[in-house]
Image (cartoon, rainbow over all chains, first blue to last red; front, side, top):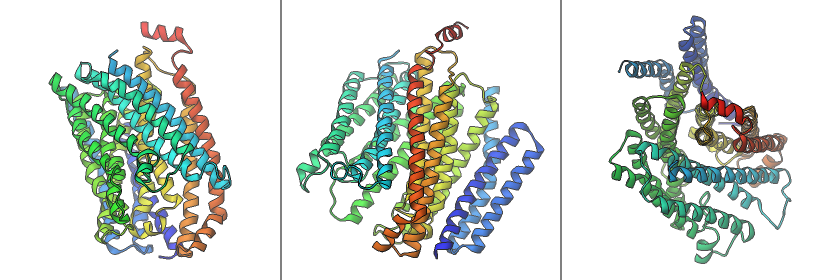
Length: 98
Length: 464
């Protein structure tokens, strides 16, 4: 890894997680306000996260195993916000009913 | 008010005082980077750095203990067993911290013998306190554990949160014992030392703050016990699942076998996943309460904790956690940037949230509000983000110039230190450090006066 690819790789990795967080943030706000535009924005942000993942896979000198982990993490990042939200709703609803 | 809650107030006040010492030592350490001759021959950078880091550990520990002593009597509906011993040990603890600080500043170092180890400095990073003080910390923690476990069995009230807390106390105390042995093989020493440093911070402390935040949520937002306990189990399982073997990212370059590169990188890379779940949880709580609460300072600090943890631990950590990047980034200001952000987000914001909650209860205010908390919140958070941003730029310069181009030679080290980006990053860090310090001053003033500046309003609110 040379000096340029070092900075590129690190910044892409940081951006990768930051965009995953931004997706989660916008997704949760969309669920709160039931806003279809916000939903779309959340998936646009996730798309940017996906593009960052592709950039990491194509441009960085990381070993193949780490690139595989990036792909698997992207799938997990996609699922975490809706799963967490659904579980939160369920626990709160059963509390109200109880 | 229970005696243990009075003790909690003392611990929280002591925590804020030590937070101030940490800030001062941090400013001093930051200034050395700009003027390395400062206090030459009197007080070295190393001592200022030791004070900065050790007081950070102490103020957070005191904050955790204060929070737990505050919440536990309500949890058990009883005074804590052995509270007299805890009250005495509080003063012993404070005196020990003060003596260690004075010894470190005045005597600084001894010769390489047992006497220096016992009385001056153990010489192990982050646990430099001499052995007598380290033994004192063990005694304090044992009494702390006795207070909790003894009361749980005496009252026969073991809730989900207290069960998690009691289990957590065992590794919390056992891991601290690693502070004592003086292993001469550096690889073996670092191997075990990281158990203490990493597993305290990314395992046992995570569980402690999880328990504290569970109680805070119940009192602040009225969230039911069943919900917070369910989430506590899930979050603790996820954080421990990734955090324990995430220990491996400290084993990359200390002479341990190669398989730690895979183990450490893999589990560290998973660490942002539960943090994202926490962010979603925070937004859910904030949204369902329409950002309204009777204690906005506490609520906002709790929100800052969720986001700060994700940014500092998740984003900043992920940049440097894979071995190929970590080879260049470890030990630079880049990791310092990550450390500052992660500690602030994961722990400091949580302790400040609890302190505002406790103030509301002790001053009998139906609503806790002021203008000053917003100023301190803004100055502390902007100051902190500014510092970590500046440290990040300096760290980039080091990794780029010193490591990747220069190949970590002595000349490359000097070139890195003299690089314009590094120097300007250090200056900017000091400027934002001053802003952070100003935020601390406002915070202290606000904590002393909030709810007292408008007594008539407060009384009216209580009457309502």
